[in-house]
Image (cartoon, rainbow, N blue to C red; front, side, top):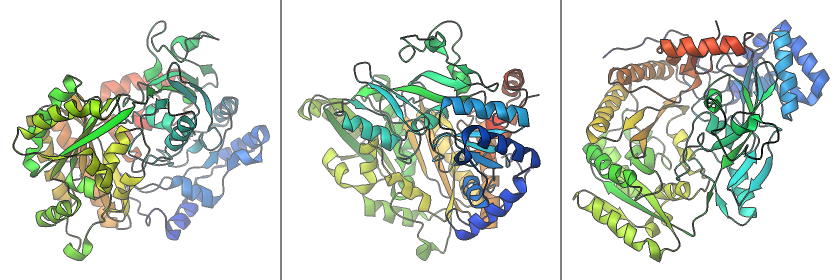
Length: 535
C-alpha cells in the first residue's frame, strides 16, 4: 500500500489544557509577531479601540493550541471585530500592512484545528467574540438571521424562548460551536435539514478588498427575497465561500424546520464487525424512499462506548488496537453492538408513529441479525440518548467524551461512503488495516443518506507522546493514500492536512489559485486554507 511520508517537522506540545502547553505556545507567539504586524495592530487599535486587539503571549498560546499531531500554530495576534463595518476596516488595513488574516467563528471545531490558523503567524480574526447576535427570527417562513458567534446552544435557547415553533439541526459536537462556521465548513447535522451549508441563504460577505457582497437575491439592495431564495440571477456564487478563503462571512440566514409534535427514535444492534455490508443494504432503501426522515447512524462499538469510557490502560497496558475481547466486554456493559443503527420518525403523536416503527422493525429483524431497542430504552441509555438528542435538534455535550479516550490528541478523517454494502465493507477493511498498522483504534460512525454516507472516523492519540504524534501524522497520510487508491477522496479536512490535500488535486488548485489571485492578490484572507493559494 502506498504511503505519503510526513514532509514537515512534527512539533509536540503537552496536552491541550496543560500549563506547559500554554507556556510553549506563548514562547512561540513572541517569535511570530513581526515589525509590520505591529504597525497593523496599532492601526486597528486606533480605528476600533484597544479592546479590539490582543497580542499577549498567554492569549496567543491559547489561540494557537489544537489537538492535531502536527503541533500548535501560534498566530501573530488576535483581532476582535464587533460588526461587519469593523471587519471591513480590518481587511483594508491588512491589505495596507501586508498581514494575513485567519477568520474563525467560535473555534470549537475540536479535532479539526480549533482556533489555530492554517499557517503560524497569521492573525486570528475572531468573529465570534463580539459578533454573536441572533438578528432576526421569522417563524412564518422558518429562518433565523445570525452572526458568526451565535452557537447551537444560543440558537436553541432563542427558539425555546419563542415557544419551540422551529427546530434547529444541531451536530453532536460542542453546543458552543458556531452555527455559521459549522455550515461554512460543510459540517452537518442529523435532521432532514442536515445539510447546514445548503440551509444558508442571504450571506453577507466582506471580500478581500474590504467591500461587502451578498450572493443570490441579496445582491439587489433592499431585496425582500434575500433570506428566502438562493437561486437569484446568474451563477450560484454561495459555494465560493464554503471551505474557502475568498471572503469573510459576517451574517446569514439559516433555514429551520417546524418542530414536530412527536419524535420517536429506534435503534438496532448487530453483533459482528462483518455485519456492516448488510446494514448498509438495509438502510439504503429506507433513505431512498424517505421512510425515515432523519439521517440514519451506523455507529461502531468504540465510537459509541468511547463517549463514556476512556481507554482501559489497566487492562491492556496501552495496546492498540483494543483487543476484541475487551471490545466485547465494553459493548455488553453498555448495551450496544459491534454496530448500532439508529434513526427517528416524526409525526403528530407517538401513537401515529407506531405503524412506521413496526415496519422498520420488521425490515431489520428479517435479517436475523438485528436486536431492536425501543425509544424508552434509548431515553435511559447515556450512550444511545445522544442519537435521540441529535435527531431532536437538541445540542448535546455527551459525544465530547470521545476526546478523553486517550490523552488529548484527536483528529478527524472524513471520507464519503457509497451506500453500497460491498463498498462499505471495503472501506472498513482499509481503515481497520491502516489504523492497526500504525497502532490506533477504529472508531467510526457512518451518517447515512440515500446515496452516500459520511464516514466519521475519529482517531485518538496521546498528544504528549512524540512517537504517537509522528505515527498519527504518518497514519493520516496512509489513510489518504489508501482511500485515493480505492477512488474515495477525503472531504472536510483538519488544518494539518489542508495544504497537502490540495496538492493532490492539480485542476482544483489551478482554478482556485486563479480565483484567489484575482480577488485577493495580497493574500489577505487565510492563504493555505483548504490548499487555496494565489499565484
